Image (cartoon, rainbow, N blue to C red; front, side, top):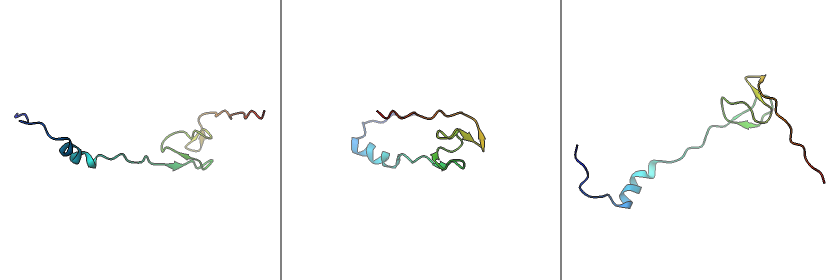
Length: 65
């Protein structure tokens, strides 16, 4: 298989890469508490998945000093 005879310029390589864009991840909302979460994952806010408690989430204690 032939190899390139000369190196491509930076502009030429960057023109080709303009279509490689990062996409936003899908966000769904927890049916139990309504907070945003990633789909097919346990809710980090309440610990529910598929309307069942999967993880017991500890609440952060606020230090009112």
